[in-house]
Image 1 (cartoon, rainbow, N blue to C red):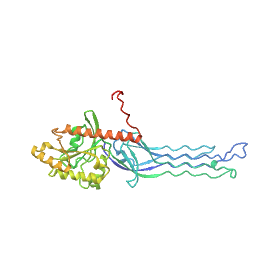
Image 2: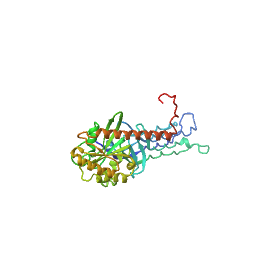
Image 3: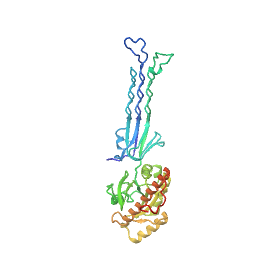
Image 4: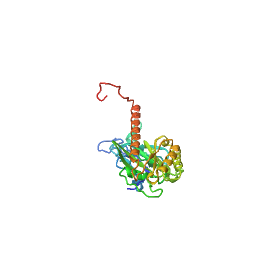
Length: 355
């Protein structure tokens, strides 16, 4: 299945049905009076988050979505049926943006979540509605209200627990393939990865989703190399694993380039917990690795992990360190949710089982 993380669609809610002008015509009833019914309401346009989707590729083949119009009213005070709603199904992590591409209308994060995007027009009143003591035979009715017509942008930001960042050809896809069953394309040239990949990783008793995004280059926060679209996929991550190629000439400059792009992009990426790792350590001698690690430690102000996805060196340690950060992030989120809901932890009771 091809991956698509951005799509433009056009939606139309249904028009309301027109009211009916009708009079009661019946034998032996001289003054039947008006009996025109109201028109039906136009259908709404909803967006629903579903679990079994992970790409927006379907919207490459269908961009127009229209709800049904309401049915006009009829005689004998019969109200027209409402039009059927139009439901657009999107994967978790999809943002619904207005035509300007910046105004956020809805953020679909949980399966089953629904959002009303365009409301259908109300049905018009029939002439029976306008009957009064001074006008007992009204000969006019209201037309139905028109529906809404919108142009929307759908932008998918993958929901992963941890993300891999780094310059092109830093070993991100190789790392993902080594720790999960994901099979990203791997080759010895930059920009091998052209779209994000997800893999489920297990470290001890902890399962988490790891996202591999294409390599970042200088100016990525301004859109260079589609950087803005790629960085959006790690916005929701709880932790980042920053991979630096040990075979590069200046590992400190490589690290600072990516950090500068994370800070310039915003979205809280620079504040996320970051682990730093020096990759491809199997290709260098121990003395060179020690020199590169010291240089990277001075730039990152933290001790880097020394790993090699080919030989397996340091992979287990890196995986468990990442799992600890993910678990810590999950615990912080649960505590924040309890605090927002006004639920506090129960007081300590020494007689309580498990205390």
